[in-house]
Amino acid sequence: DNTQNSESRGALIVLEGLDRCGKTSQSTRLVNYLNGIGHSVESWRFPDRNTGVGQMISSYLSNKSQLDDRAIHLLFSANRWEKRSLMEDELKRGTTLIVDRYSYSGVAFSSAKGLDIEWCKAPDIGLLAPDLVIYLDISPEEAAKRGGYGGERYEQREFQKKVALFYQKLQDPTWKIIDAKLEVEDVEKLIRDMVLDCILTCKKGKPILK
Ligand code: DGP
Ligand code: NA
Ligand code: NA
Image (cartoon, rainbow, N blue to C red; front, side):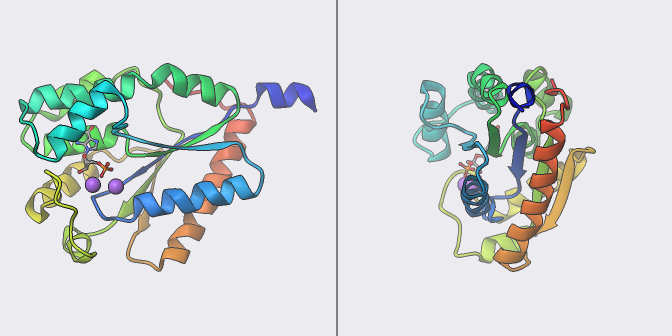
């Protein structure tokens, strides 16, 4: 039925969690699976380090530059804003987006530095809202054990503990929480079921959330 196809939209699905929670490899597995069963799907991530703003963020994260806490917060937000219209176009075209980190990272990481949480939320107001947020739940201790951190600015156990506390405050009805200590294949299976369900709901005509 062509009419239905042209109207059905993709789902905006976000993966969140502490550094080393397994998000990035689960995202790859998920996208490969969805591609394999014939879905139109793209893998996205924030920060997107390829843009001009993204390069400033990348330089900050690798400690090559210093920036005021609020200035870097706004750059992370700008990095999501610069992709907003492309995101909306893709969703309308029927493409499902699997996004590795989004506004929840923005608020959790900056609040963990001591910035006011409401101030942190403000610049992201008006971005597209995800249809589903999958939080891969891991303790900061477990995360630190996983082959060590890569050495970027935020990859420190004490800081990640604070980030975890702020993530808890951000939970909303779009969230599903998965125990990230489960076997990789089990996590993958849980994610697949949640995602297929979400894609179906969006196809049936659920509006894009703003
Ligand atoms: P990743 O490329 O997923 O490893 O993310 C890079 C680091 O930046 C990671 O420690 C999480 C953090 N991060 C991601 N998004 C934001 C954001 O919007 N604001 C802040 N302050 N940190 C973020
Ligand atoms: Na990282
Ligand atoms: Na990552």
